[in-house]
Structures are given as C-alpha cells and as structure tokens.
Length: 213
Image: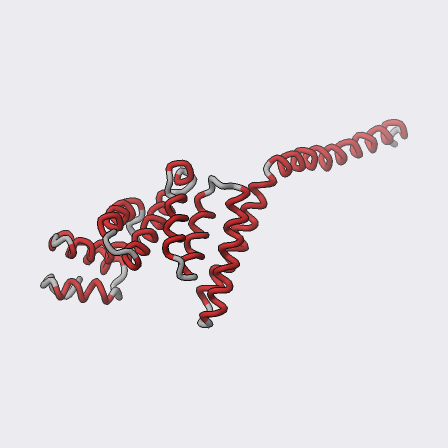
C-alpha cells in the first residue's frame, strides 16, 4: 500500500498543478484582455456594423434599408473611435454611407481607409476592393473625376484581378479615352471572369470584337 504521507503529498501536488493550470493562463489572459480591450471592442462594433449592413442590403424596404445602413455607420464610427488605424472600419463606414446616398461622405471615408497610415492594415485583395468601390462611386456621382476613377481601377485590378465589374468599368474608362484595344481587353477580362456580364458582352459587340468570348 502507498504510504499515506506520500498519497497526501501526491494529492497536494495534483491540487497545486490544477490551481496553476487554472490561475496562470487566466491571469495572463486577463492582462492581455485589458491591455487590448479597445481593439476587442472595436472588432465587436465592426462585426455588429457589418451584420447591420448585410441586413440593409438584403431588404427590399428602402426605408428599413436606410435605417439599418445608418445604424451600421454608427457602429463603424464606434469602431473607428477605438481603433482609428484599422482601415476595414473606415471601409465599412463608406459602404454604409453610400447605402444611404451620401456619396461625398463615403468617398471621404474611403480616402481615409486608403491613406498610407491605415491602408497597411489591408490585404492586397481588400485594398483592391476598396479602390474599386472608390472608383465606382466617383464614376457614378462625380463628373470630371474620370481620370481619378481610372487610376483607382487600374490599381484595383492589379491587386485583385477577379472582379468582373472592375474590369467592365475599366473598359468604359478606356472607351471614354478612345483607347479601343485596351477597352476590348478589359471587357474580355470581365466576360472571362463573369460570362453572364451582359454590359461587357454588349460593349464587345459594339466595338466589333466578336461575340465577347
């Protein structure tokens, strides 16, 4: 039989190990959590805002859509106040503002997201998407900004080459610049990514580039 003193010692050691396993990680986690609390809270508001924006886009009720987009923008602002250098929150704010029809404010938010200080937090694909969105808003709402939109689109497709709409818009910019060959190439890329892109196919036919393979 095991000596009672040895058994007691083993039990005592087991209890100590359990306490250490339970307490040490908890202490470290608590310190880490408090140290990074603003970032955790910022992500929390970002997630809520993204969910609200998704709901805004999914409803056919315009009034409800605007209300949800407004709430999404407010959550984005809360996230930005806690972590101003996270570009994704600025992009979320831009999308929410654009959904409400505030294109100028949306562009300002995207300008911040794509500024050197914050853009480094984006992946290449995310930056490409943000550039595309900025170009799309410029193309649709601001006359005389074609060159600026064009520059964004050129950079966008370099960073993220799977966006058919970006190539289609780029093709339109090339057409306005009377650069036919480049326009055809851009439209063909759009159709290659999205065969059902009617606008790009129609453009190819208009330019005499076949059936838009």
